[in-house]
Image (tube, rainbow, N blue to C red; front, side, top):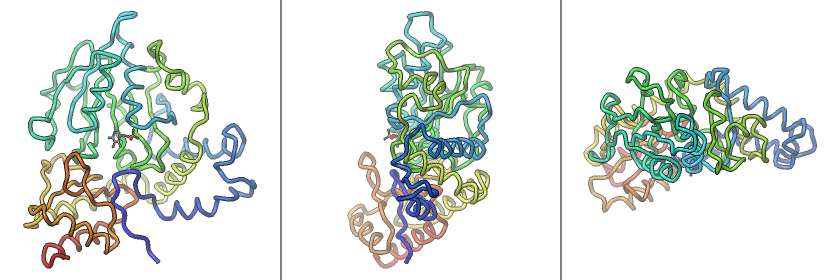
Length: 370
Ligand SMILES: *Cc1c(COP(=O)(O)O)cnc(C)c1O
């Protein structure tokens, strides 16, 4: 019996192989007599899980040695505060309010800018709001501040469906501030060019595993500059010095993410996943572009390979479209409430067969209404 295809934007589908492995381990992990949820985070069993998870992630994403991998909590939204609390004072005069630059390309980067204003001078370097976040502002046009202690972008806007297919090269723009990326919704969908990144963060629930775990990958030299008001549990230096065990980490979410990392390695790693994700996205965007009923508003050069928002030209058909999809085992296609329409999230766990099933449905619904 096969499971339906789940297009949720997050928490999102997890590979069936991973879920079956977790189910088999639920009552007794590897003969320990304990389920993973029941283990001390300081015991040897969880210690082994933790070490394996860290080293698999470092290998998968080719994370260089000078970057720390932190397993935190609070999600992407908490990081919108934690990042300025940790980085904004780094280049400011002692006691002075720091400055950070933000490029606004959709809802998530807008939230990042808004939250950072509590902790630093958050400056708008560029915005795609005038075109409704359907394209990315050219990096050469960004108004970067010479005082900025970092520059933050959201490299995949989950709601607007806009993705940086290559990371901006700040050094080439004459800017030596570190780049901070919110890669919540496309982490592990493709390789990362770490030479262009100072810090990356992402919640796990889109593409890595269950909610509750937040991944932070931070260049070591950026740590140790937290504001005095920063909670100890959110001070990157303290978290790093304690191997993410200053407080109890989200152990079960880390364990599931570890199973996902092993699954990704079996799939062929990041280059293989990127090729697959491009093939899936191409299939879906072509079906949308070739139809008379559906459309997507985003410039082809920056369309997200993970989150594909689309609209029906006749919005009165929306409910019938969603009901018909559900009847075929195509779940959670309703768009985000702020933008309406539909959204198909096609993260790593979505197989090409799932995208093909959606494309077949798009075609059938357009022709016959279901
Ligand atoms: C989902 C998401 C967030 C918010 O994550 P939470 O875990 O809900 O805090 C932030 N940024 C992006 C790009 C996201 O997709």
